[in-house]
Image (cartoon, rainbow, N blue to C red; front, side, top):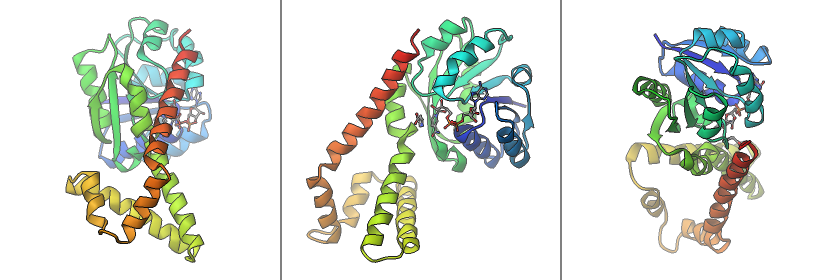
Length: 267
Ligand SMILES: NC(=O)C1=CN([C@@H]2O[C@H](COP(=O)(O)OP(=O)(O)OC[C@H]3O[C@@H](n4cnc5c(N)ncnc54)[C@H](O)[C@@H]3O)[C@@H](O)[C@H]2O)C=CC1
Ligand SMILES: O=C(O)[C@@H]1CCC=N1
């Protein structure tokens, strides 16, 4: 049976653990966080074990580092003292390239992954980049963990920042749009509850249509948009306001921030 450890039990680790159990994964899950309350709650809900950091490393074959990028340097310095032989480290931290881990922990097998919080509902899409020391069976283990949580693709390490811009941070963009649509619905005279329900269910329905019909986003959009009709009026307004350019700028800003972070952690 797989033995999976987590160092850091925040939003993303919580989504992954929830998703794994929902997918029926029988993996042994070992959890450590500086704040004991977080792994304790997860362990109670999802049949996992609260551990010390040393226990997570000793008792797990695959160790997921799910802490903020700013906390990675100190963790790697501490991990250097532990025996990582034969272990696979998976890092989900944004903006820190594989080279950094391989320099700080020479000889260690590392896979860098960019999932998203929709892992909790088995709809993460996760991009994986393989480090130099990763064996075939370790690559398969990493793929098995994340394919239980949604679709996976292998990419080059240099592509992870672009992945972050599209899908790692991506759920937040759609939540923001839902917030704005709900606010607009309220201004148009609906109650807050009505407007929120309508915005949220519309987003969920559109996502399900994309997932279940296999049709392209543009094709589905055209099916809603009658010539000279109501949708067309809204889409024209989006276009006039430069939505395409706004989205392009936002994704570039996200990728740029990840690149800046790579600079910060290049020492
Ligand atoms: N939240 C998201 O949607 C995504 C996050 N990520 C990456 O995942 C990582 C975690 O992000 P979140 O879960 O959102 O952060 P979070 O702040 O919710 O969780 C981080 C957890 O790490 C713990 N922690 C900090 N230092 C620690 C240490 N040395 N040992 C053990 N625990 C420690 C904190 O107490 C906290 O519970 C980040 O590096 C982020 O870039 C990647 C993709 C999506
Ligand atoms: O905002 C962040 O930095 C993290 C990485 C991707 C999603 N959340």
